[in-house]
Length: 368
Ligand SMILES: [Zn+2]
Image (tube, rainbow, N blue to C red; front, side, top):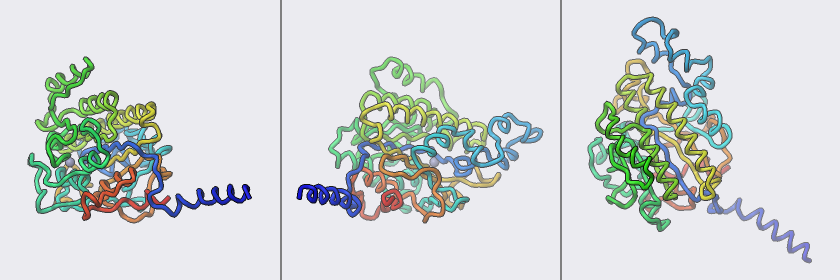
């Protein structure tokens, strides 16, 4: 009889999680990272020779330092030269990435504008609002964001939901109600007790970029990391910007350099998360982009309504709650408006409470 009861209990345990869509997840923290306008071409293929040729003013592209540093025969080998940690460790052993159309995976924005504010707002609210969000002007987001929803649902204090971003306008996008979360964006002082961080906060104003609205990503990353170490947020959003601005300036060398530095930031972030009890194997990391850009030498610097290719983006997920690894191949298309609901689902929350019209959680992440 006891044996029968034990068998029955064991069978019930085996059966329960499979049939139950709200099975307990391991995720207790979320980290969202965006790389502004980072093209699929470099993410999946590293150095784009056609682009390098178009920006090489003297001699052959094959004789340049960039070629020597980043070229390899296959896209797989090339991308590991710009993002060795992301491809060699993160996507190989811990997570997966969608968006490589060469292997049958597509990620698309649903907004028709294909520039930053509409893209970030689609990520953070789960919906394109093409008629309302149609410029990069510093206007308060008219719609509550997933960051605000999570803060309310989880009953968190403002410093437990933090956004650190290089582009100043993100300050206006990340929250609908000013001051509801912690936001530090663009050239903005960051108050922190550590003397090194205090010094960095001052230095950001001494090391100006060519763009008034975007600070160097290294400051954004250092402040985010300091906040992570000191305040242990449950929800962190890190918005890096240089990949977009150097591309607008046609500085292909700097675009590749920004990807290399971003790879180092991701490595440091991941190693920190895995060293902490609060975060180790309890944190879902989602890395994506606000928009794509053109694919040819004449339009790779651009994006927007007239650039068809800019609708294609990519999305990577590292989570203790999914076993998917490497590249997604031959899968149905997924969309930028699904990010908010996907993040919530990892915490067992239903984002449609905040926005019934938002994209649904990405099914493939929750069925394996
Ligand atoms: Zn952008």
